[in-house]
Amino acid sequence: MSQLHELRLDPTGCDAHGFCVEILPELFTLDEWGYPLLNTGTLVAAVPKDLVSAAKKAVAACPVAALRLEKLKS
Amino acid sequence: MSTPPVANARLLPVGPSGQALDLRSLAAHETHFGRLPLIEGPRIGKPGPLVHEIEKSGLRGRGGGWFPTARKIHAVVESAGTRRAWSAGRKPVVIANAMEGEPASSKDAVLLRHSPHLVFDGIQALAATIGAEQAYIAIHRGSPVIDVVLRALADRNDRVTIELVTPPARYVSSEESALAHWIGDGMGTPVYGKRTFERGVNDRPTQVQNAETMAHIGLIARYGGEWFASVGDTKAPGTCLVTVGGAVNAPGVIEVPVGTPVAEIISRCKGFSTEVSGFLTGGYGGAWVATDNLMASDWTPESVAAEGGAIGAGILWALDARTCALHEVARVALFMAGESAGQCGPCRFGLPSLADDLATIAGKSAQMSDVHRLNTRIPLVQQRGGCKHPDGVARFVSSAMHVFQEEVAHHLRGRCSATSTGAALPVEGMRAIPVGLPGKDFK
Ligand SMILES: Cc1cc2nc3c(=O)[nH]c(=O)nc-3n(C[C@H](O)[C@H](O)[C@H](O)COP(=O)(O)O)c2cc1C
Ligand code: SF4
Ligand code: SF4
Image (cartoon, rainbow over all chains, first blue to last red; front, side, top):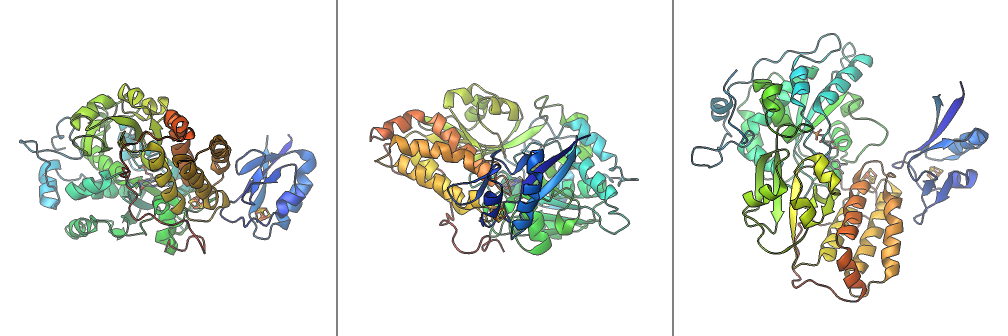
């Protein structure tokens, strides 16, 4: 059983500080208004195995706790 | 069981000479519909038996989403059970959503003005079925039906007292998590990450149903699910209220079986009053459809969706071809941008950007680059909000760009086919783009 991780962004919390975009450019870009845009275009994205530790860092770096990393079982 | 009302005038019954009955008094209401029977409560984590009738009826919510009501009942009761709600004194909460946030809708107000007790009966029946001891009816602040509702409530002696709440008259304050937030904490902004049926009012499982849905429950509790499903569409049984507006000779709220041909709805409203350039279905969170396509369709959520529309809360607006469709769309987009709760970047800044692009396209110096910019921005506001407000606006705008593409081409050549500068679609109380603190007007 492998572990899948999902990153979730709370848009009501996010203040466009942009730390997540700096730490995880593989998953995030900034939109024209300065807000993080996940590569899925939605509020959830799967995190590849090799990016899990970077994702944890992004979660910790967000000053308003708008990011959450969730473990999914598959 | 009393005698079920005739045919297709269930929620808005008519008298012998075809006039709408005034059932505002409890006596008149009970004479017409009979008394609400005793409704049994839930047992060991299962909803009361009325849920089976509601299942049989196939009732789907009339507030816009057309979600099966029985499934919501099961979800709320299940969530109450698993969260030890009963022993912890955290029983479920019921809310009737009569906010009617869509400016082009009047069906909930018309229903409450004629038959408020039917809505209250539905609330009582639902509260009993899920074991709720707290029940609310939410009507937006300043609504003209508040008086009627207060007077009718004073007539009743219910097991569960129905409390009237009046959140601010803002578009997104009618969204279900916003209502629960308002009742619990006095803030009418949507909440992200909590599902209302699990964690609504003060984190209790909360069942929100549209006022019309409640009224249907009030009838199913009396006459049963089979009776309910004896008219309507197989996938969406029963009757529904439709607010027909715009360029028809007799605009207003009518009740029809779901599945009635749109052409028949229009002829019941005495036909078009002028040439029509397109239909808006479902209101400002809905979608535009080309006139001929919709006229050939039936009024069901599925058939209207197949034409690119969205039946939503039952709004059907025929746009007068003498007004500029693009100008109308731009005005509404600006209004909807101002209705954002301002909590989420893509909604707070994205919607004003869409409105800007539309204003340019509707103007005299539209460029192809403006259309391209708008088209790339639409997906940037979709699926990125804390609630579905921006998704509704995106659908409204993108369907307009499709249905009115000839008019767009016209504007790109510096022309406009409008012969009147008058405004058509209602945007009363239109607000400026939000500035300052997010959600500040939502108290
Ligand atoms: C932005 C927004 C506005 C809404 N406005 C209304 C409204 O005015 N009235 C309503 O009944 N539902 C409205 N809804 C839907 C409610 O959230 C909820 O789904 C509905 O009241 C559930 O009732 P139903 O299942 O009986 O349709 C709105 C949803 C959104 C996202
Ligand atoms: S770090 Fe947090 S607040 Fe900053 S952009 Fe990312 S999610 Fe938003
Ligand atoms: S998407 Fe818009 S309306 Fe909905 S919660 Fe976010 S800011 Fe508020």
